[in-house]
Amino acid sequence: MPWCSMSYKAGFIALLGRPNVGKSTLLNRLVGRKVSITSSRPQTTRHRLLGIRTDEQSQMIFVDTPGVHQAKKRYINRVLNKTARSALEGVDIILLMIGSAGWTEEDKLALELAAQHKTPVMLLINKVDRLKDKSRLLPLLEVSAGMHRFDEIIPLSALQGENVDALSERLLHYLPESPQLFPAEQTTDRSDRFYISEVIREKLFRSLHHELPYALAVEVKQLAFEDGLVKADAIVWVEKQSQKGIIIGREGSNLKAVGSAARKDLEKYFSTKVFLQLWVKVRENWSDNAQMLRTVGYIEEE
Image (cartoon, rainbow, N blue to C red; front, side, top):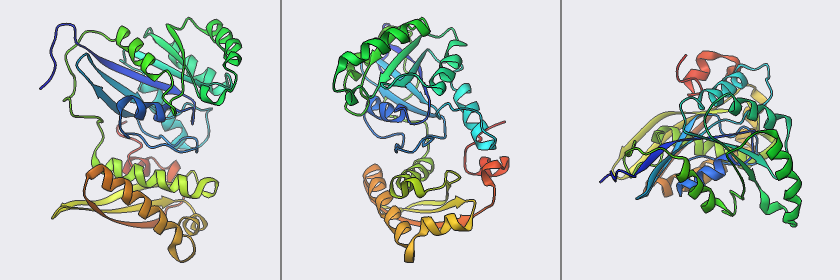
């Protein structure tokens, strides 16, 4: 049953920042369950994704975005930057995240995007757990305060949860009064099919690390729920025959390991047995092809 107190608050909160700064890790921490995949590879997040946190005081709807990066030639890179920009439209709060090592050119690019909006902007300095001497934060705090009139500057560790509760308290202060916008039990706006494809992609990133091509996508071709079993067939798309060989591995060893790891995560998510079949196919230059990007879900509408 939804909470409907006159003082109840609800709103949209955008997570903005360069690739691999920790936005998805923070999203999962705030929502309290895994709704966005993570890895050490930049540009792991390629979609706009909602993560929804509901309690008796508020409903916080977090918008996780692809990392803002310098313009590149490939069509997919332009699509990702466009997705990040469009995600800022109509939100109530922007969370701009940088790392504790200091500002980069891509951080500054993300700040330029945030500054174009009249929305409150909070600066999050992530990965402070990597600093043995916290006094090293002081110069960064001073520099950051001079770069923009941020509504809040909060150092935290998304991975360790340090200061995340303090962030939640400050977010509540800025949210508008509103009834719930989503059912209380809903934690994301994405489908089961989307989640399956993302988990497979995460396991590919984590298993193959630097060998893995960036031009990789996962398409779930079949999904069925039968007799207490989830059955899914998925295609891993790459652009070169050599990339196909890397993903499959000797006698299929890499692909089997990825499928096994993905199945374990999916069985936790669905709370039932999962039968997962994976194929690897080649389509040259798919990441420069608008129709293919639409097929694998990177373009939702023109």
